[in-house]
Picture (cartoon, rainbow, N blue to C red):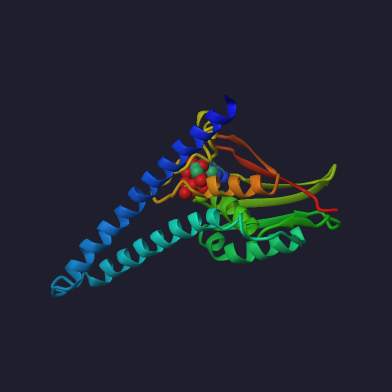
Length: 225
Ligand code: ADP
Ligand code: MG
């Protein structure tokens, strides 16, 4: 039956996820372990500083993977709150300002002034952080990320548009699969987690993209009133 198929799909997904996590966490740990062993010896060639930076980067990477996964574990228990989307977006853009500056990316906001409240969990912040991060990372030579938010038929449509490298059509379907990444140091978890959170909010995500031109990620959320 349909239900059975859905269940077995879920089980496969959980297995894939577990295998992926083990793999993803083992790699940086192996690297950390090797460098730590070297660290105990003399700093003959003065490369301790380099190794130290690698160790810190690897630790940050493990932390990043684990916090992305923790967002997944949280939603079931936490309650919903009425929140103002403009405040959420302002908070998120403040958090991500540092990375945007690093990439020479300007973040522009065009948010309707009379937006209704949304009923949401704290994880909703992570959705916009993940989408904005991707937008920024798609523009290594700088550019603009434009966030718009509009009210339409009892829903709020939030769009994050970049003028970055874009996504080939055949890859769009793979987005949101656990560990699908095209980045050297990507985790491929950001949009999987984001889609889950949006699903919990009875919303939807749409991606439109053209290679070399840019990407629009649209999040649709039901309004609370
Ligand atoms: P990660 O960012 O760690 O790779 P994500 O789940 O956030 O994982 O994204 C998965 C993949 O989707 C990225 O590796 C990239 O190929 C593609 N992608 C997502 N957003 C964008 C974007 N705005 N522009 C170009 N590619 C994107
Ligand atoms: Mg990402």
